[in-house]
Length: 84
Image 1: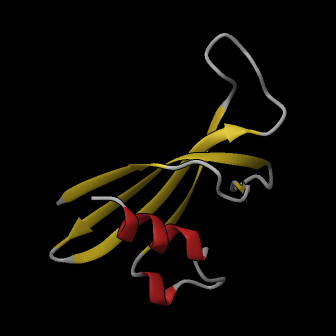
Image 2: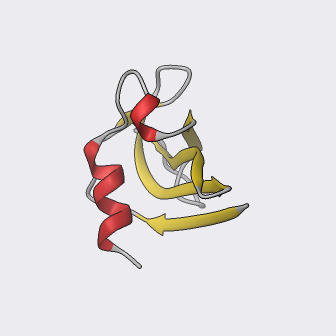
Image 3: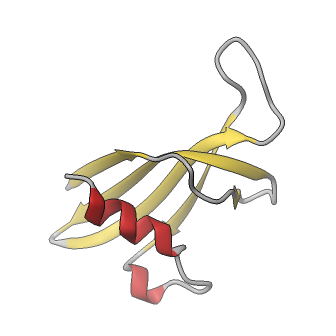
């Protein structure tokens, strides 16, 4: 298992599993046996502030990107290509 992390900024807001909008800050991809197993976008809930920058949430997709319905946002694949 390999975990890869990318810091992201300037990406469109996403919705977490509760339907709350959030601003992505980090992309995490778990690869098992050469294939994508889990894709997780971590971020800060919109409209939250605090001494640590706001409340955190995430959104996960399980399995290869081509299986996802609705599709994974285009910026996720672009982020993994643009950064080492």
